[in-house]
Image (cartoon, rainbow, N blue to C red; front, side, top):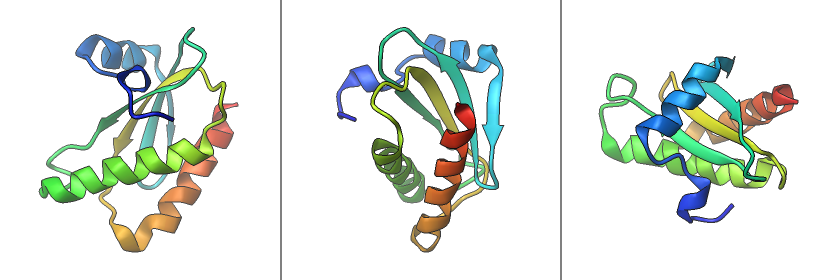
Length: 110
């Protein structure tokens, strides 16, 4: 995955189209909202509210670490728009648990 804008959900319309598709998977820390796209690659968006984690540093850490894990875990031709919603805060000590939750969620998309 590249850092370019083509791999990100950027505006409210993109997010609402994924939410309105109503395909949802969850794990103890994460919610996946999925919608197929015709782009030939995935696009990611994140929702991490202040109610979940007050500190912006930690919200940014969660966003960065999930994006980095998904870079390795998602197949090349995975044509979905994904909104990852964090429902329970996590930090460095739970990194491996989050990675296994992501693997499980990706496995359930097929």
